[in-house]
Amino acid sequence: MIDPILERVMRLHPRSIDLGLERIERLLAALGSPERKLPPIVHVAGTNGKGSLVAYLRAMVEAAGYRVHVYTSPHLVRFNERIRVAGRLISDEELDETLGDCERANEEKPITFFEITTAAAYLAFSRVPADLAVIEVGMGGRYDATNVIEPALSAITPIGYDHTGFLGDKLEGIAGEKAGILKHAVPAVIGRQRETSAKVIAAEAAKLAAPLFRLGTEWQMMPTGSGFRYQSDQLQLDLPAPALLGAHQLDNAATAVACIERLRVAGFGIDDAAIAKGLATVDWPARLQRLTRGPLVEALPAGSELWLDGGHNEDCGLVLARMAIDWAKEPAPLPLYLVFGMLTTKDAAGFLRPLARHAQGARAVPFPAGHSAYTPEEACAKAAEVGLDCAPAPDIGSALEDLLVTQPAPMRILICGSLYLAGAVLERNG
Image 1 (cartoon, helix red, strand yellow):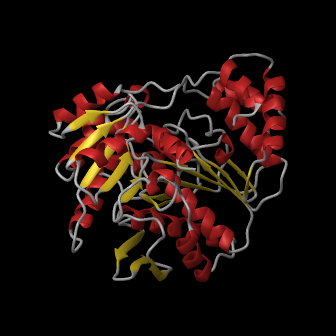
Image 2 (image 1 turned 135 degrees about the vertical axis):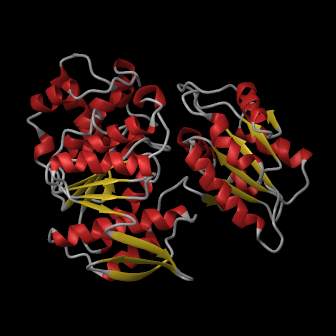
């Protein structure tokens, strides 16, 4: 399913991580600086909720009739998902052309996979007119390959512990890297933060004279019976619950509304109806997604449910645990079982700990090829550390089959632990 040029790029530029801007700045200069030829940009950093925020923004802005470029990572099934050109996924032909142009301009000089594909996204965007570009940071912020742009608006979602091997294991340091996307005098919308992160962001913004619009200070989000209320000094909206599930999605949706408020100030005509429509129509797979069709679903006993989530750190485990609490409040709650796999760079025990008390058991599965992941046996050892009964399985199908054979039905099964695993599940489920 991967086109020949992308295969070559992956072979020449393996998925190593080397944070820095020198290589991509050199390549972009050789390409004629396409990053300077983009429409107004919203640059999004954070640990959790980045992708959801991007999805909400795209849905709301497109509902108002604007064309939007979007760059996100990683992809779930096809690489094309990362690059959305003026409202549509980049075609195979466009991807071949832009990656080929980047390869030739790079002249076989050192560059990472993410750097060259980010350059390809900027090049593709520069060739097609649009009204807005929404760019998601890959890792960190300050030295992330995306951070060569001059945005009209910055946004930072909740910051937590992730990628500690590259960003450090101190929250102050991680927050400093995320705050590195802030630019001089460019407004920034800030989602819910721990006190430590909030202080770091405020200090960085003060150095840059960047106006901050923070949840809990400049704007508020209050849950209501039917959704939530967004309120700032200039705007009050009562809005429906978003299509994405989970209490945390109210924060993500409200952060998107705060971004829309700033875009309105910048001249975008995005009315209240477009905001509500965006909330109702947003689509972002593998974020507390219930799978309702496909071979994996059809193999389950009647009354059972299959859910999928790509979260992979402790904060994500807490979010899933809150959902498990809500599930337990149902009139006839289904027993919960986990099927999970995780990269070795993630804190598996930290992710599983909040979920352990709510799950009846778990099955650990291996990862798609090409990723450094815990073996099922190693993953089960991590589960045992937090008191979660776990058995290894050779693949997703075997894990589900084992649960169906050994546990009473119906049941609720949550496949979780990684976006890469979630992508493999979506591909297998058709």
